[in-house]
Every structure is written in C-alpha cells, then in structure tokens.
Image (cartoon, rainbow, N blue to C red; front, top):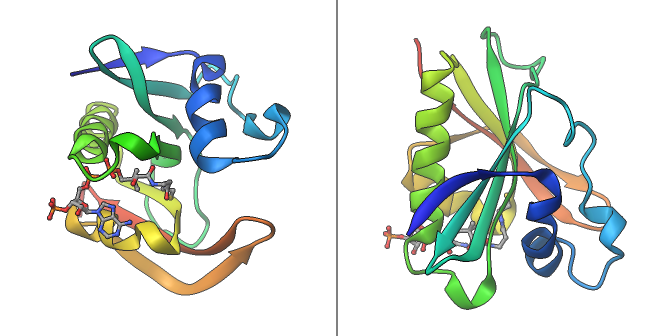
Length: 146
Ligand SMILES: CC(C)(COP(=O)(O)OP(=O)(O)OC[C@H]1O[C@@H](n2cnc3c(N)ncnc32)[C@H](O)[C@@H]1OP(=O)(O)O)[C@@H](O)C(=O)NCCC(=O)NCCS
C-alpha cells in the first residue's frame, strides 16, 4: 500500500465512482483543482488506485487560524471501504499539512463520514448544512497548532 501525489485528472475515476455516481464526469472537477497550491493524493494497493484525497490552500472565515488547508474529495472505492485504507490516506494528509506548517485542516464532511473523521480526532464546527444534490454536511476541523 502506498500514498503518492497524483494529478487532479487521476482522481476522476475514484471521485466519479464514489462521490459523483451517475453524474457527468465534468462534475468531478473542483474549482481550484488545477491551482499550483493544490495537492492531490492517491492511495495505491498492488499498483491499483483505490483511494483519493486533495488538499487545497483555502481559508475558512469561521476559523480563526492562519495557514489553513482544506481537505476535499476524500474517497475510497466502495469494495475497499472499511478496511483501514481511509485511515492511511487521512494520516498521510495530516502529515502533509503538518509539514506545510498548517495550523488547521478543515473540510465539509458528509454526514455519514462524520464518525470516521471523529475517530481521527476531528471535530464538528457549528450546525449541519445542505449541499444541493449531495446532502447534509458538517464543517469539521483539527488544529495542529494551538
Ligand atoms: C469515508 C471513507 C473515505 C472512509 O474510508 P474507509 O477506508 O472506508 O475507512 P477506514 O476503513 O479506514 O475506517 C477507519 C475507521 O473509521 C470507521 N468508519 C469508516 N467509515 C465510517 C462511516 N461511514 N461511519 C462510521 N465509521 C466509519 C471504520 O469502522 C474504522 O473504525 P476503526 O478504526 O475503529 O475500525 C470511505 O468510506 C468513503 O469513501 N466513503 C464514501 C465517500 C465519503 O463519504 N467520503 C467522505 C466525504 S466527506
């Protein structure tokens, strides 16, 4: 098992299968995917890409910290879920953020993934909110510098 940097285009097959099921492939593009400051990660098992996640240099105005990073598009292929792969990917993302001197990593978490992130020490910020066509989300975050 290996986590490697990949391009935003490389993320599309996994984003499409897990996060944008039945939707046109264009919906797999996130604004900022092609920014120089955005980093995309792939989790490989036997050289097969089974998980993806991306880190954007984006501030959340409700969080009073500097040097914030946003996690987006975290997904593990359905047949590979529940086997610890998501944890491996999330740990690598946290290491990357810490290496960049991030004070906080935050993201909009799907309601059904909140427990997964809580397991890794992330907390919800505020009330849930709806993202049209995708569902109920919570902002979640973890501070690296207090
Ligand atoms: C959320 C996701 C990335 C987690 O990856 P994963 O490989 O399935 O997670 P892991 O197997 O590493 O799980 C780690 C731990 O979290 C738990 N967990 C995983 N998904 C969970 C869920 N949806 N609800 C509750 N607990 C969950 C596991 O039981 C495991 O607990 P343990 O360490 O006590 O055994 C993956 O399930 C996924 O892609 N889901 C669909 C897309 C999605 O919701 N993405 C997140 C968008 S915010």
